[in-house]
Image 1 (cartoon, rainbow, N blue to C red):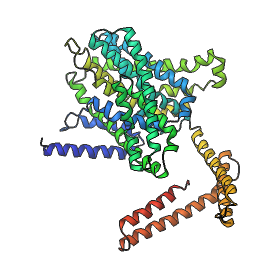
Image 2 (cartoon, rainbow, N blue to C red):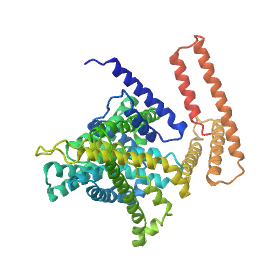
Image 3 (cartoon, one colour):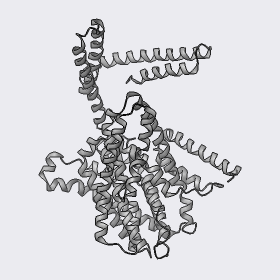
Length: 530
């Protein structure tokens, strides 16, 4: 197959536009998922740009597993445990409520859309996008617990929503479904997904314990999402829950599995990979609209607009109607819950209600709807479901995402400093451990007295500096001394770096030697926390 010059020129233009959008996002102070969706939308209607529609299988089986694994891997197991009740209510109860509520609204608002297809639409738009919610929420200074709940919800609700989606589609395609069979299959889908994720996570952990090869270890980490998703899917369990379970499990044990070199290289690889895949997913969402419109005759009518507004309103309102009672009713009914977790301010559920953004998972599920039923008839309302799904994604991701800063300011929320305080607390604890170890080793023959004294002074100064930052006491003199010291170190490191570059330029050393020394200097500079 030959590729025409026109196709190459279009591909180059799209790549340049994609890169420009990523570069513009920080300058415009717009979260990059929102800018990419809007940019993809504009590109989709640009003259000469062909219709681009990524196959749903590529999203569900090719792109989603590593992204889900990465999100779960870096999720705090402690936060999941601490917030298991609100996360469970959102990822299960709200998914069921949204599916039923949207089905009711869609069936009433869309003439000719049968209940079975309406439930498919409800299941498709019920999960929030874990990638969009996390990338947008973390940009703003909001309490850590809200971020933890939104992240946890986005990770878990994909599993429950796709299970409902599976049965809703099956009911349409087959014409009927046994409730007993559906119930048993639902239990296996959830329990099997979690069990397979734990089992394969344990196997991967045992394998990585016996490896000391950073490139190989990072490769296994990148493939772990596929190692868990595909077997779970083949066995009829939830591949999403399997990936999330394995990611949380392996993430918890990672300090035992990796070396310094593996962690440094792995973090860089994951950061670039997830950023690139997220970008491609969100820009694809925008580029998909022309193909969606083609399925509806190529244009949007007033009727379609009102139908989309009705479904979008249902998605947003149902979340508000669920979040507030789910926040306060359990506390009102249970003294034990109130004692362990007091009433939060109303601003917390208000913001959580506004973070129900949908994304590529919903679009991929909509595009994966079969074209025909088992009887050979067209799947009822398929094109309309895809259009309404796109409308929900656009309204929630762009509309709610862009207004997030305004909502946060209106609610008077700000960063509670929990993450920073915990990091400082960890540094104090680490410095105490180092001081204790110095005392334990001070009598060893290979430890010189002057070296031990010098290190004691270093760690005591470090501990005092972090203790002052943690408590807020003191006049700031220690922090000023540290800042001046680190500034001097940066100047010296930069002088070393430039000297090595000059030596390479003069032909005194080769590029390999320069890169090796630069890496050491970069690590030394990264160690500073100014």
